[in-house]
Image 1 (tube, rainbow, N blue to C red):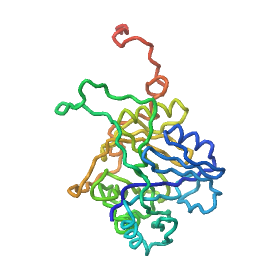
Image 2: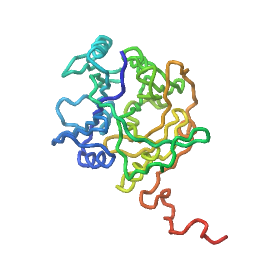
Image 3: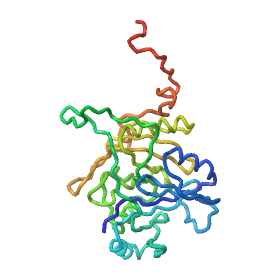
Image 4: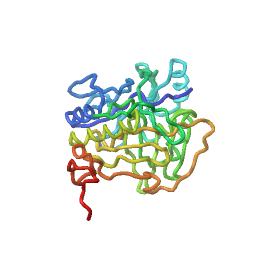
Length: 321
């Protein structure tokens, strides 16, 4: 049995009009709409559902709305789904429903598995010329006016019981620990081979549970920048970014979401195998970000927030001081 990543998430918010505008600006396609629900898709078909809190049948949240209500994980086919069903059977809330196997994790979050609806994609991505490897020849690197996320890459959750929650994902769903903040956080990937993490569990010093952020994979650094600049031009607030995570190596940009907490564009995370040995880190700002821009870059001036816009002159035209 091997989980293949996130197939669908459900968020809840009473402000569906703002969520509609936000996720459209974010680069998702609106594929279904009703008075109580919006359904978006990424490029590969991964779904983001935003439901009004009054929608019938909506799973309970981990905290007050707006927040995350459900995560559906992907498997390749019916055989893997049956294996998941058997392993999940002893968990609270277990049921088989509409082609999905559902249960609750130790926090009470609705967790499901289904045969994936995502489609394989071949996308043009930037090549990086380093000193020793120079694959981009007679070709400029791309630039993006906005982002179109490929998929939901990971979710980050606060938990009151890191050990119990991590044990559920490892023993029931087969996740693997990539790295740790001992006693404070676990980075988990769905399978031994894959990106650095699909789930990050955090146990803060003051106990709480809920959503920290939802992260969307994009093609390359240039799309992280293009997406962040577009969100700035549309008036959305950057929390932090662009920047780089030293633990996963990923490049990021975080934006405040009307559907709860933050959303992230990211790319270039580490790819791991069975040979990887989990490392341990001490929580702190430099462990979280090697470098980062607080408040982001203004989408119009293309400079850090509250910094003078470019004058049109070359830097060499400035008088000596």
